Image (tube, rainbow, N blue to C red; front, side, top):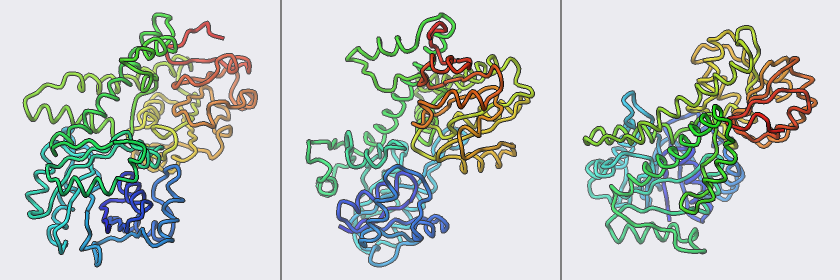
Length: 435
């Protein structure tokens, strides 16, 4: 088939590349001239594990290309995917301007009847609006479930593929497209467009609730002397609950959870439904990074004049995305209290510096994680990159100031190894007597 993807962000680029890898001819369109130029020169505008090699191979084999406009022969594609961003507006609702702009482009440029697939995360009823714009074309909802850092794997080994369309022709067309991903079993869920749109929000909100709940439990463990590791294992062993998304941390971030939780709250408000759980989830997430800040402040004694090193600036490992990352708010807080901040991240340093500069914050970053810790009074492990999980603590202790503290917000370090190097340790809700 001939496929056109609008958007070369995490969703559009992974989806377009994945579909081309399945043997289809794919054009990825984006109005960002710099991103398209970068892709045509063989570089990626994002970091996503395993993606660069796939892009290179499919471009080389002529199945994948990039452009800033919809030109022949792709104005006669079989399917058009809308995978542009839907950033959060001030009131929490998603900004649909780019989605609707693509719909208008398709209305004016497409030369034969085609299927238009909305993959962007959008509120209930958006596909109906797109349908009104594009007229005779068929519109389907096909939400993405790609985790940043594991998006390539998620594309080729999806838990489920949701198709929102009541047209048997469209259902059959999308089933055919995704057939190579179903060799080991049926993964397609077919429903109506509105239910499909809501499934994505419901899934992300449910996962965010689990994270916020365990974060609150880590606070309770911290003040009661209980151990969050034991609580997680005890709760997760219940088959009704399961073990995933039960790890305490500094709060969730990224392009999905914060935006989608607030969007679901806003959707409920627009329809007269109070979404109490999503409202509480959002508040709990904001409060968790404040809790972490207070732990750092307690470890430092006072932040004024102290040097704080942050290991991990992206909101999660294996991505360079810093959108809504805890590192951003935490850095601003530490600076406001008179501390100096230096950061390290295997992939996200440039993005972190860019955002900090936009906020007029003076933050230093280093390419070496141990150099970043030079003279630090507190080292904060914010993102559990593999290179941080078993560091050389003896080497680290020589770099840091006397009596320095390691604050592990992901609870991945071995406490006895930290203490053996002469460093103090602070986790999130772990028992203080642990050694």
